[in-house]
Image 1 (cartoon, helix red, strand yellow):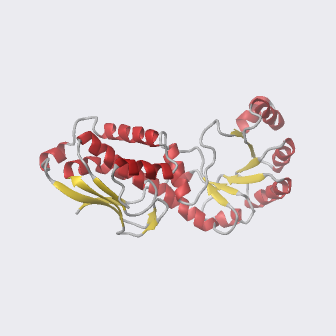
Image 2: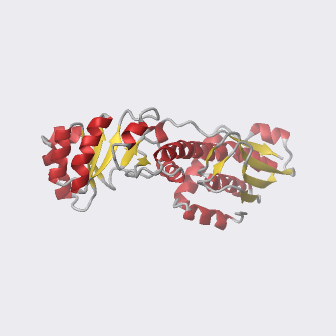
Image 3: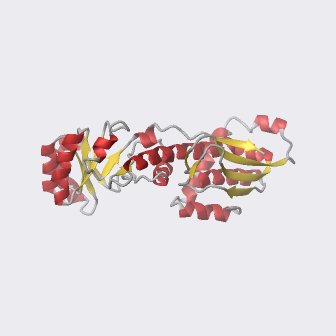
Length: 298
């Protein structure tokens, strides 16, 4: 799919559910960061202004993609700053799985522009594809069980919207985006208000239509949260056996459940067999390994 001119890049971002203006500002700041100490000295010294060429972003290892149109936009913004044109072609869509050696994106134009944009472009697509790849592994482990993997707010500062988009590309679902789109009553809120019920009533009175999740450490708290009307209960650091008992309290009442804390690939089978609706994995965004991608001139 050829995505020049820029309007088509914007269409690709819109289709991904990403705000074009916000993404553009983020990329511009990343480019400014890379050029804060001066222009690309190595490229200016070694590449003539009239030299053109083609570069490809290529997978160095298998993975699941996210952020390809973001990488394309980084290239496009750099071209606009340089006052030149690039022909950009997306070769693999976000959400696709790739093998080592697969080309992902191709751009043709002035080599100075291509190399100036190289690292910023790669940083986005590598980081986001790392999130998508990790999520994809979890989603495959839960496939067919009715349990979904989802993220947390443990995101890299400034990258939350993009990282949560990458989770969706990998087959996961999103928890709340921030502090205001749903309420999550945790132990500190319960301690501050005096009881779980008091904390729930306080949230419900001030925000009557906001979804409310309650974090519970014990089955007694689970029963109390169900009684007060919680819609979703986070089962915090519960063993699989206790989590299963919690599900048996919640599901007959129509309350969804989310297991969180200490869940790894080694024990995920035990947790998925409890019947929980979600398994929360903070590592999807806070400590994932980037996908190894290269930027190669033809």
